[in-house]
Image 1: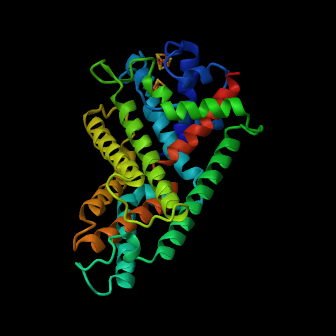
Image 2: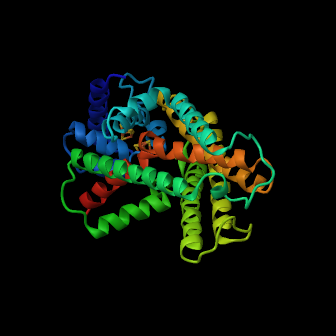
Image 3: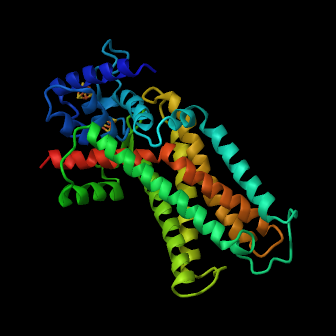
Length: 358
Ligand code: SF4
Ligand code: SF4
């Protein structure tokens, strides 16, 4: 991909759209575009990260291929978003490797972390049946889990904040954050408002519309939130209420974690199914490995969490704990270079959008 050519193509496309305006009610991109008369590189990054790839403008466009203008807004914007993931990630320079070799890096990371944990804490046994209390902490010391998880979590937060700040500044949004646009942008993210198209959802090749993509995104998002809530509930149980793990199947941490895991697994399978049957013409094909490797990692984190729950009172518990922790720590390490960062840039773009629309 030649970045400059893609930016130039996107600028040309926006000029055509700004004259045409047939799609003006389709999404936030067109509302934001109409406020501008000319387009700079930073405008294109802003607009590309407002686009959620519903494809409404592709199937409606009289200038889409095979027309000589070759207007393919979803694909062009996908390319720009791919550049965004490299350009603003922190620490810099790792994202390109994750883009090209994400699956391999994830596999190596899971194998290395589980290998080290195994070497340090398994006591040379593969399985053991006389498990003292069926908790993580009887396999890996509590301090090791807490301190490494906290350090990785801090790394993710710092990375996201730095990416957010540099992207926001690049697109020209340098003023102080105001409460109203922040609340509106949060509401958009939580409801995935713009994924509803103009009420009917995303547009497909056979001219049908469907909200399935929005629902699948919501399942993954809320699944993620619930698993995070489960970890928080477990910390409250242990450190404030002094109730030690493992927790019963009907305790709050287990109910939250199980619901979150089910939602994530269902959402990921659904997204795979939609991706498989979707039209490839408006899709930037080089994103496939990047997207699939992250989805698979998220899937296996949830799946291994279920295996831990199911096997926690068996001889396989030690093995399941170590693999699950290896997957979770890999997820933390990989998040700043994953498709998840789309949420960071999209939130920054929505903030600017709501500020500009006032
Ligand atoms: S995508 Fe095509 S139809 Fe839609 S506004 Fe642009 S030029 Fe017009
Ligand atoms: S693909 Fe959908 S979200 Fe993206 S610019 Fe076109 S209409 Fe807007």
